Length: 264
Ligand code: ADP
Image (cartoon, rainbow, N blue to C red):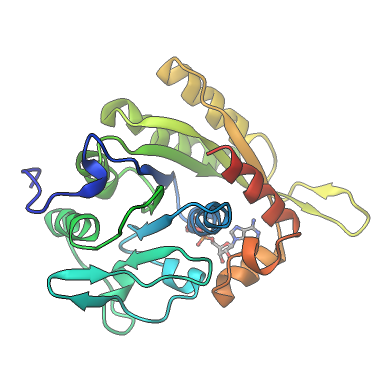
């Protein structure tokens, strides 16, 4: 555990031109995976070569959200990742687990799985690699920081103050891992009513609070990259395997997500 990788990880090379974003959250259900797959699709639409690693080992949902049904193919000792409609290369633990079996791995096996995802998968040249981390501050977040020391952290939270406190902890690990904190994304910020007014179902201010608190902790400005409204098309897009930036590009959520992607 923690030794040198058996295989060289291309994105960990000092001369790697790939920007690696690890997407973190304090707790589950805040929309971390939805944000990851949509940022990936939005960046691919901008013409970038994009890959996604579903590192949410216990709660993998990326293949469904991106509409990936085919398994990776193997050529010699290389694994070729499936490519989504939006042109994004995707790899997930869900592609290696038969049926809907639970994953019961412990730390060292998780570490090894991440090493394989990054080292044995043939990604080709990527401009951006996004990692959907499990919620919280567990083994995988540390493993990713070890394997990809140049990776940068994005924190997703909701407007709720209770969610903000755990999200701050997820962001604060960047102090130990020395990852750059790119910024905070607030999801589920409001629901737009038919009369155009906004109902703040989960309260307000969580994203700003996390960004300000992290700025104080690390002594540098951590921006609030954007706010994404509650939007039924986003949920439907995830369920149907077509990220909302592709399936409903003019929806409020897609517009917000594209605005965030442009800042990356
Ligand atoms: P996490 O990865 O943080 O566990 P998910 O991305 O899986 O969260 O989102 C949890 C659920 O909430 C999913 O069913 C998703 O479709 C839905 N969801 C996330 N963000 C929104 C949003 N802005 N509007 C509507 N539904 C959303």
